[in-house]
Image: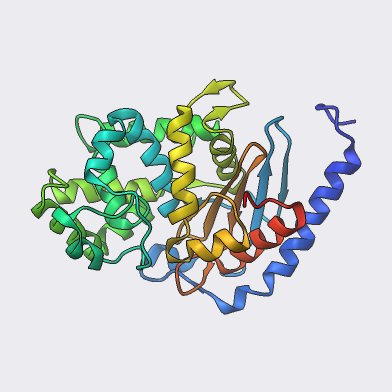
Length: 318
C-alpha cells in the first residue's frame, strides 16, 4: 500500500499508461518546430515530451523527463488574470479588456484597430495580456513582479521558484510587436504607464520557470475552482477561478481553441515554450511540456497527448 492508502499496482499501471500515450504522441514531434522568434527558446530540445497529472489527494503521476524546467510564456496570462481580478475587481478589468474569443493569431494587432477605443478582445491574446499585466498593483516593476512571483510560488507550493533572466532579456530585446501593441493601447488610454517598464514586467512574467509537476499543481488549483487541497486554502476566489477556466476554454489555445474544445474538451492554456496546463474540473490538474510547436504556436505532440488522455480517461466536459 502507498502512504495514501492506494494500491501500488494502480500507480504502476497509471504511469505505464502515461508512458504508452507519450510514445504514441511522440510520432507528431517531427511535424513541429521549436519557437525561434525568441532566440533563447530556440535552444530547447525538440524531442522533449513529458506529462504530469496531479490529483486532489496528493497523488501525482509523471512520465517523460518531468524535471525539465521551461518558461510559462502565455500560460502566465491565466495566473496574472486571477491576480489582477483579485487586485482590481471584475468591473475595472473588463472595462479595459474584453471577454470575446478571436480567430486571429495571439500577437495580432488587427482587432485593436477595429474595436472601440483600442480595447483588446480578451486577456489571452498578447494585447489583452499586456493590458492586464499593467494592472498588477505595486510601487514599481520589482515590487509588482515580486507579488506575482509570490502568487505563483503559492500555487505551485515551491517557495524557491524563480525566472530565467536569459529568456526575459531575450524576449525584451525582440519584443517589437508587443511594443507596437502597447503604444497603440497607450494612445487609447488602455495602458497609461511607461511602455518599457511594462515590457520589463511582462517579459519577466513570461519567463517564470516551472516543471511539469509544478504546472500540474497550478492546473489542480484551477480545476478545483481556486481551492488548494494541499494547503487547504481558497487561494483564488471561486468566481475568479471560474472566469479564468472559462477563458481557458474559449481562448486558451490561441486560434485553435475551438478545435481543442472538440477534441480534448478541458480548460487549458498553452505557451510557446511548449508548455500546456490543463484543469479537469473537480478531478485533477495536468502539466505537459513539448517544445515542438505547430503553426499556431501550440505544442504539437503535447496537444496530441492531451487528446489521447482525454479519450482514454473520458476527460471532456462537453
